[in-house]
Image (cartoon, one colour):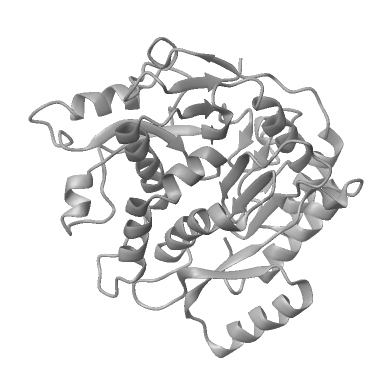
Length: 356
């Protein structure tokens, strides 16, 4: 997902792709997502038109963009573009892997691959850089390591609840309930225990769905089976259409937890065989880069790095990813959600997987 004026970030993402995939330039293409329900000014329209003519990699989807009261790239616009991309990619993508980022969408080409398209990488923040060679290797390998890989839900997970009764009744559209924390799976979570307490009868989240895990937004991967089952459903499409055409506040802007809630609701009610794949924070991702803290620097396990907004940090991360490309990866292990994570899934067909 991109914003009209983020042309420098878009160019850094193109440069990163070219550096990391110099030996296999056809392995990935990029499409930068903007919204056509736009409030772009004349200068922004010129930027978008000139860049599109030069690179041919901008796509305008059915979502708000630009800025006016109630709309900003960091709020309503990002949320709408995130959901619009998931709905759009059901039919638009034939790639083996499709990566949606804020400010860059990277589908990996199926050229030369014997397997049909299966995994769709769906979300990264606009200041996040993915380690393309190692991330693609991880996605390919997981297809033989986890149950129902086409229903994979991959990322650094956290827990939340969502009050659909309030949201669907025309109340607060940002219906997360119970607060949140950074202590998601695979470790035992005090946030999860607190959410379970709040879900009891008489507590303030007793009507809410969950608790459920969902990727924290720095990166999300949804398998193609889950993508088609959830984001091509009439209920999700109707949800998107209703919020996208809303012209009066309150506006929906809480995309991360809501995307997880949309998937959780469909998985629960239709017994979809989702495989939750939890990566480890600060081991498989970096939330930021701090030169004074070695634990925040790229290692061979890093699959993506966040807050790479400056050219200096973007250059460092790209070069470090180039140096660590092809290093050995840890396989996924799968087991019981309750015994391993302390989470009770909505049905027995759901799997919980992580890396040792």
